[in-house]
Each structure stands twice: as C-alpha cells, then as structure tokens.
Length: 85
Image (cartoon, rainbow, N blue to C red):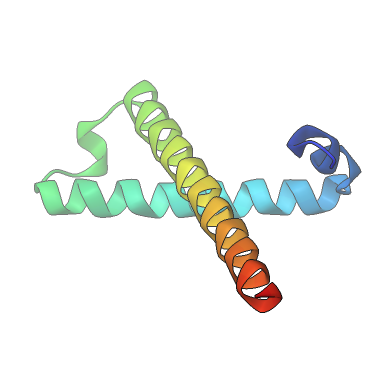
C-alpha cells in the first residue's frame, strides 16, 4: 500500500494549493471567533501573535482531519470484516 507521502505527491499542485488555502481560511475564522469570545479585538494582537495562533489552529485542523481519516478507514475495515462473516 502506498504511503501517505506517495499519495500526496500524486495530487496535482492546484488541488493541494486550494486545500491549503481553505484550511488556512478556516483556521483564521476559528482564531477570529476565539478572539471575539475573549472580548478582545484583532488590534490587541501583533502580526507574530496572530500568525502563531493561526498556525496552532492549522495544526489542530490537520490532527482532526487525520483522526477523521483513521476513523473512516477503521469503519470501512470493520464493515468489510462484518460482510465477510
């Protein structure tokens, strides 16, 4: 079976770029929501702090995506196993 990296290398660059842009936009939305809930404004944070918070959210999104993929694979394998019984 192909590794995760090998599969990613086969994906066309425009598709990867679009995915990364969407993920970044979602991370920015999450950070804005967190800032609004904390009662602060965007001007209270400098660019480095904002970039750090956005980077943290991007990592969290990546972890969530990997968990979802893993659960999906395990579910598929479980259904396949049950179908064979």
